[in-house]
Amino acid sequence: MDFTPIVTAQKQYYNTGITKTYTHRINALESLKEAIVKHEPEIYEALYQDLGKSKEEVFLTELGLVLSEITYAIKHLKKWMKPKKVHTPLVLFKASSKIYRDPLGTVLILSPWNYPFQLAINPLVGAIAAGNTAIVKPSSSSEKTALVIDKMIRSIFKQEFVTVVLGSSVLAEQLLHQKVDHIFFTGSIPIGKKVMQIASNNLVPVTLELGGKSPCIIDSETNLQMAAKRVAFGKLINAGQTCIAPDYVLIKSELKKDFVRYFHEAVISFYGESPIDSPHYPKIVSPRHVERLLGLTENENIVLGGKSNGFKIEPTILSDITFESKVMQEEIFGPILPLIEYNQIDEVIEILKHKEKPLAFYLFTNNKSLENKVISSLSFGGGTINDTLMHFANHHLGFGGVGHSGMGNYHGIRSYNTFTHEKSVLKRSIMIDLPLRYLPISKRTDSLIRKILK
Image (cartoon, rainbow, N blue to C red; front, side, top):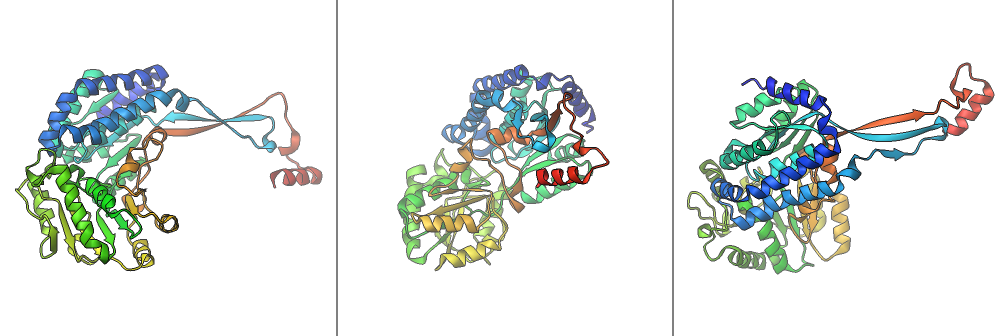
């Protein structure tokens, strides 16, 4: 399919200047918020069909976060748009300096299947607030949600402003070859590499929100029951199909038995005695993913769960795991939690230093010294101390990866920054023209300039 006409139309619309105005931006954000509320029942139904998500989980992890992001952007937009005055060095007297935030133009947003509504619309909020036009390509694996997004966007926006492209990953790749002004991609590391490679042909900048194996360290100086409950929450939301889910737990051997017991108690409190029969426990996105996940548990010591009904997999804990185990060779992306024992925290830190930098990191401890040591020693996208996932929900914290887990970040002001360019402008006075910079420069003037610049 040739997407050139769509991109051309969006660029032409952008060039009219209408999307840059405060009125257009604020009206678009308010219209988007109203449309989400209007289509709320359809969004719930679509996410239940695609991923088996309950209404409560949808609001907690998809709708609520998006509505909150829009509200925050509306509240702060005027301030974000205001040019920022910065200091001007004495050597440039008389002058003033400002930074203007320019929209990038036409942006492409490629969203994944695991949080198909939130991860399509949240970046769109930033793109609209920043004054861009946008093309949104939802994942075809969450087909019902993609259809609702398309219907919702068509009901409020012109296609030359925001358009949704439906279809397979083949179309997504074709879109990547278009000369847009920015690509925002959320997905796997292998596809992220491909996105960056194709984008480089047109020198299109990219934001990559990827993933990886996010570790969780549990120290002996913590409330173990609380830690197990919060790890269970973070691991089992969306049946573990979350890029910032705790991928595995590092724990001391003497804590392991009680951790498993407390984890099991938390599972029962969340989903009942039989989680795979619970309407609140989501399904795995496809049979292929079910097969892959079950393959990771083969020949391993399963101390909790492990069964499947073909659509769902029980919350599962694997014990006696090492970094060489099969389950540790790829991001799990499912409700399977390996436990790796450790003796000394310094050994753990040294091992993690040589692993790829994860998207998220979690530590449960009441030891402030240990907390500081771990944070200063390890590199990761973002993290939470004494809980899981919660750093994602703070507008004031940028969300994004580092190294193999991604590049660039968003949420709140950082979403606005991602979709804008800092245009630096120096304004000189024509009333005064100091001769210091003009050739030839005398020894006295040269000495004066050196003193000023130093």
